[in-house]
Length: 124
Image 1: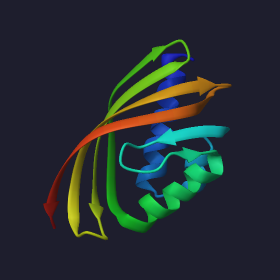
Image 2 (image 1 turned 120 degrees about the vertical axis):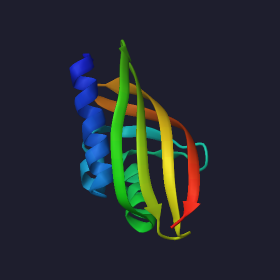
Image 3 (image 1 turned 45 degrees about the horizontal axis):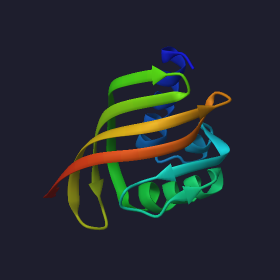
Image 4 (image 1 turned 90 degrees about the vertical axis):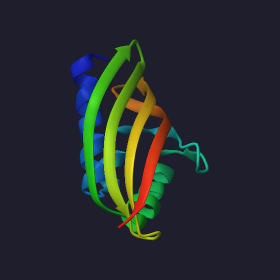
C-alpha cells in the first residue's frame, strides 16, 4: 500500500466518524476484519464493525471533529495518528482524544485495526 492510498483510507475513516456513517466505515474494511479497542470487546467481521459504529458512534457521540496528524506505511502495516474531539451525549462529557491506530492491509482495505488512545474528559 502506498502512503497516498493509506491516507485516503484514513480520510474515509475520519469522514465516516464525523458523519456517523456505519455504511461508509464498512467500505474500508475487509469482510473478515478485526477491530480492537482496549476498552471494548473485539469486533470480528465488517458487519460487527458496522454494529460497533452504530452503537458507539451513532448512539453516543455528537459534534465529532477528526484531524489526521501522521500516517506511516511499512508493507502491509499502516500506523495513523490523529486528534479527535466529540461530545459523549450519554455521559454529558466533552472528549478530547489523541489516538494511534495500527492497521493491517489486505487487498487495499484494512483487515485489522488496533487502537490506542489517551483522552481528556470535561463536562459540557
